[in-house]
Image (cartoon, rainbow, N blue to C red; front, side, top):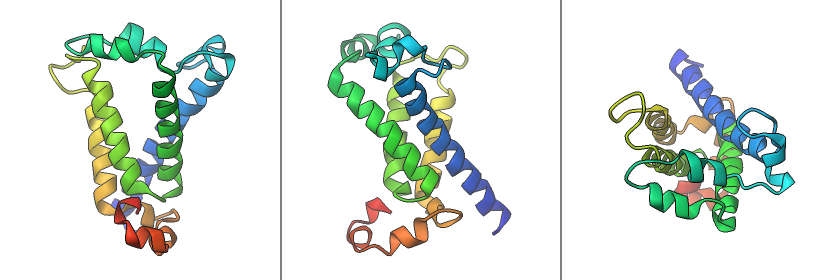
Length: 161
């Protein structure tokens, strides 16, 4: 495997872990970003704290209105689980990367302007990494991407690659 392929593998696994970890921490309240009493399994909302308290800027009212919505909670958690798992396994990397890019842009827009830079923060960098993963078929190295790409459904709908 070439050096650049190894770097993309590490970026794919790293982004997958960031997303999957967010799911696990919010589900179980592991005490990192989510206290145990705020865990989803303990009856907490995985979106309420951030959207209600942290969101600011021109779209704050919109994000505040979404805080704690059950449908938003489920979409967010299923998205984190699906995107993180797909990236780690190397299957569905394209669709997971596009969905992750959308999530990152939404998270970026909830914090405008960013506190440490006029427009750029880690959400934009993550989005760019995810777009890179989508375009180079990063699941084919150190993952199940080659096997996945041969499935009939994936051949019929390449976005699932």
